[in-house]
Length: 330
Ligand code: AMP
Ligand code: MG
Image (tube, rainbow, N blue to C red):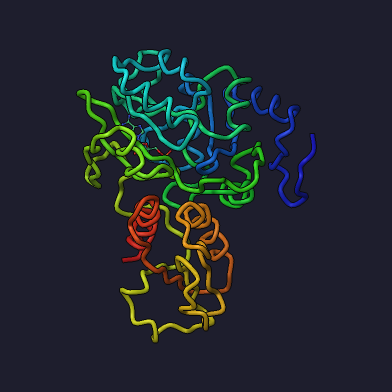
């Protein structure tokens, strides 16, 4: 087993041999960071409370913040949740594996620490071969939040994980850059209705179109069970503002980065200008958002100014993440 990058002795290529080692760590109650299509996860055996407790400690995550259980087949859904609805099965058949998490009533074997004492559990099948293999050979559901320190940028490469968690984690499986790059959409099913808890990698419009009904909305920063809904989150270390909320002439061009949606030639006199998608494609923009913010954290700039993104499709989730980052500095 060898590290692929000399400077990080905890990043490992996702070979069969290393996947086997990773699964042994999970089975023995340890932590493994692994790629998913959304962001990198910090995983533990989701049925082992002590292992799961380590996730909270490494991340500095408040214990009232429940985790998502990652499974590898729809048949596992029945092991961990109770639901009596064809509608749920229809939805997961359509979107799994993929970036949509369902919140359903939990069965007793799911530990309280995973659900932060809730009677419901969040669960999904990730659309990433490495993640799916790891879950399969570990033989347990893997509880995993994003593999970063609480409140900071979510990691979309193995190096992002290593830079943030450093020696607090021994084993990071490298799977390249995450294809979606934003956390999953979270939908709760209760009283025969779907309720949107968080915008994410599948747009609420797409889900509504498939279901043929509107999702109820319960997006409230006051709900302590859902820190994904906190007003401030996902913050880069550099101060970030929305461009239209500041006087741009007050900022030194050489010390201020710009994040814009597409290449409309605006702000091209700023040397640190990042374009989320040259062709104004929301999926590409989503995949680049955290990636660019990570890059800018290590550039010699003092400020990041972000353009607002049209709130259509995945634009809603991108604006949700940007707004939470900006709120950190408001
Ligand atoms: P993440 O922090 O991206 O791993 O996503 C976890 C998020 O899922 C939490 O912050 C909550 O917002 C949400 N979540 C997880 N479990 C539940 C649950 N049982 N009820 C409501 N929301 C949940
Ligand atoms: Mg997170």
